[in-house]
Length: 113
Length: 115
Image (tube, rainbow over all chains, first blue to last red; front, side, top):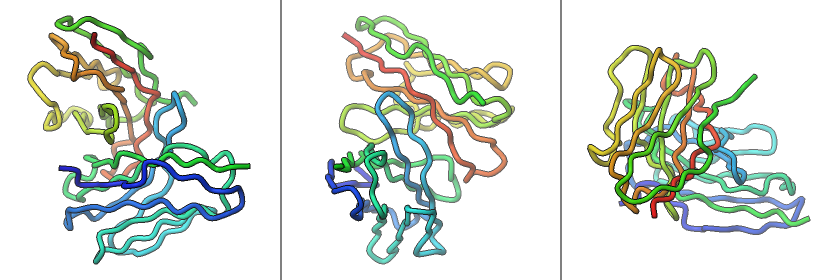
């Protein structure tokens, strides 16, 4: 049973446009969410996080939105750059065991120059 | 500074053999994690070490899997009597260990293929 779902395995976006990556979760007890980015042959790198007391967190070109009622998380990248091409994983956890991240299956983003 | 390193980067083994995967965490990081990513799946938590505390082994899929962390630094994940379903990328991560929300820094992974 996949508790964290990324239903779009891939996404292509033109350089300069907005990339929107989506993530849905099933466990309403999750209260900490993260996005990781992964380049080929490298480990995932932390991008941005959000706790359930917020509905938005911004860091430069990256913004994460949390809709708790819909159990939905999204990552917006504006403007998208070719260097953003990577696989993006969302992850969720319970504060009671926060180190146990539950990851989605990833979305491969390709930003076209 | 140096990040998390893992060795080997690739390992091909025959079914039934034992394998050892190594992780060198970032110096000074007291928390260490092992994950695996099977084809088409997300990263799956396996085990967590924090300082001298007993490890959280709740994610280990079977008793063929074990892990050690010697001297609070290097960790070895051992898979005994490997099966084809063990084929995956095994990722190690470390964090400062001060808070559970500390950023986890991942190594490049070991790709294990069991024939």
